Length: 428
Image: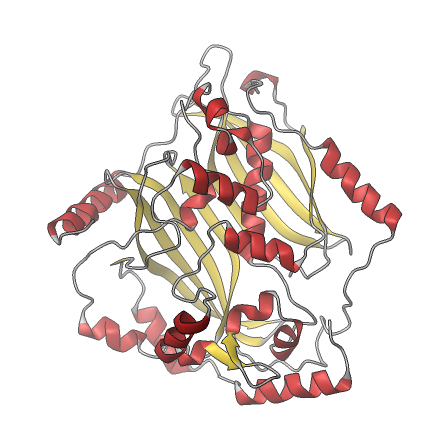
C-alpha cells in the first residue's frame, strides 16, 4: 500500500473533486420510494444455474463442499443433484419483464444520492427452496426503510433496507434477501479518524502456520447425520479461518459470478460504453484514467481517498463465508432457513478472520426441529467484524428429512402475479 506524502496529497485532491453531499431533499425522495416494488431488469453474469457455475461460485468463495461441487456426490443425497449454496441466489438474475415505472417514481429516482458511496452493512435471508441446475432466477425489489444517522466513519449517512424477492421460472419464491445499505459522503479526511492509524497486517512463518492449522482442521459434516436430539445449547460449531484477505480473493469472488451489474468491472469498449452511460460512477485515478468507484476493494489509493487506510472486501464476501460455515456444520440433510448478519468492521487487505459459533437455542415449530445459532467473525486485532444469527432445520431420528418453511401467502401470491405478468409481456 502506498503511504507517501505525495500519495496522501493526491488522495485529498481526489476527495475534494468528488465531495458529493447527502441532502435533505434526497432523503425525502428516498422515503417516498418506500413500498414501491419493481421487476428487476438487470442481466447478471449468471441467469440460469448450471452444474459448472454452481461449482465455480462455490470455489470463488473457497468452498469445496461436494454437495455444491460434485455431481456424482449430489446424486446420492436427498436432493438428487448438486444444489447451489443458498446465498448464490443473490448473484443469479435474469431480466424480469414488468409494467413501466410511473413517471413520479422516475422523477424521485433521478440523480438520487449522486456520487454517494454505498456500503453493504448487513443482510437478512429467508430461504424457501433450493436452487437446482436448470433453475433461472428472477427478482423484484423495493426499499422498505430509510433513516438518517451520524456515522462514526463518515459523518452524515443514510441507512436503507431493500427487499429482493428471488423467484424461479415456476413462479416459486426461492428466497427473500433484505440488504442493509449505508450511504456515506466521500469527504472524510484521509489523515483523520479512528481508522487512519491502521497498517496492513503482516505475518511471520509461525503465524501463517497457525492459520494453516485452522484450515487443516476444518471439516464438512456432509453425509454424516447431525440429529436434532444430539445437539445441545452451548455446543460449539467449531472454528474456521477466512483469509488473510488478498486482492486474489476479490478477483476469485468476481470470477465466480459476482457481477454487480450494472456497475460491473468491464474492459475496453464495454468500459467505454459504461463510462458514457454512468459517468458519475467513474472517478479518475492518479494517472488521470477514469476507473470504477468500486475499485476501493483493490486500489489502496482510492480507498484512502474516501477515508479508509487501505482496500477492503465486499461485505457479501463475508456473508457467503458465513453461509459456508453454517452449511459445513449443518450437513446434507439439514436446511439453513434464516440468516441475519451485521457487518461491524471493515475487512482490510491482509486481515484474517476467525469464525466461531455456538448453539443458543432449540425449539420445535410447525413440525420442524429448529436450532438457533450465533456466529462471530474476529480479526487478528481482536475486533468483532461480523455478528450473525441463524436458524437451522435439522433431521431427527424419527423425522429424518426437515423441510423448508412455507412462503407467506401474500408473498407467494405476489410472486406468482409478477411472473405471470413477465410471461404475458413476452419474457424469456
